[in-house]
Length: 364
Image 1 (cartoon, helix red, strand yellow):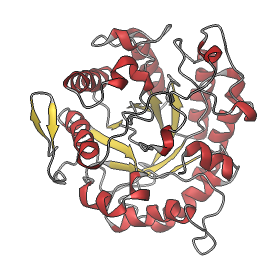
Image 2 (tube, one colour):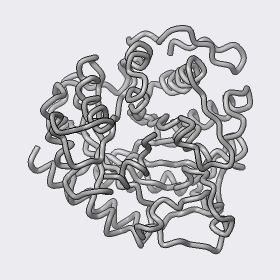
Image 3 (tube, rainbow, N blue to C red):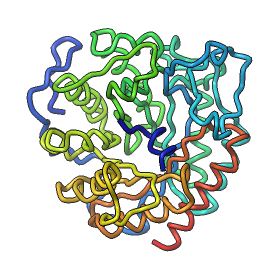
């Protein structure tokens, strides 16, 4: 079983009765919110995935790492993925400001901000960690991004592998309480972001293998997984916003994915390796890369995602490959995902990611 950590290291048709989503078939593809059918180079998205909250894994790690006074050196390779839940905001504002300016300097135009429990939500204040942003603080930062020419897009990852940010609700998945919480959060975030073009729902890596180290595991599959996905999609689309997800479900069940995934959902396949020559690739990397081709063949809009985590060439190669195999009308842009918390020890790696996507932009 491959996940982002292992990979890097190794190389609304929704029926709702009450609060429960009931789904029999994939929803129709008539929703076009956020769609730009004629994507010019000027309109192309050049995005960076940054984290306000970094509570994404509930790994089985020593209890001392949950101590609020403990701050690990998150960018040391030996501790790269020791990121257990923390009850305080893992975020440095000076680093954040530097990154926004660096992005603007190279001409990037979008920030996908993983919010998690980093906001004091009015609908569910119990989710917020210590020092989480107030609504006023978030509004101020959104204005700052826009002034720099950076379009802010919210991300809340509802995959059960990455939903520890939901606190106790992460252990109530697919219940009426859970659906109400998700509905409230999606609605409030859309309002806070002044109805953004897109809403990233995550939905990656929800398998038993990805949760092997967790103390508490929950995995949805089959119609329940799809039913919950349609529920999130419906909550986003009814507000006039376009949903966006990670595409790696298709690595494992491509036939089901292409039968059930709505074309209205913006797709981000991801691959962080250094080899893009399909003839040289072996499995599973070949599947990871050629999913870009398969998504194109099935007519999905895409934002391919690369990273500087494992090598210095992936982002530029991702752009070259995406440009070659995806029709310009469906190639909405590209995103880099450094997979580092927004902290001072990680600043150099963040800046490297921006430099690399900046080079790719110049050569596009």
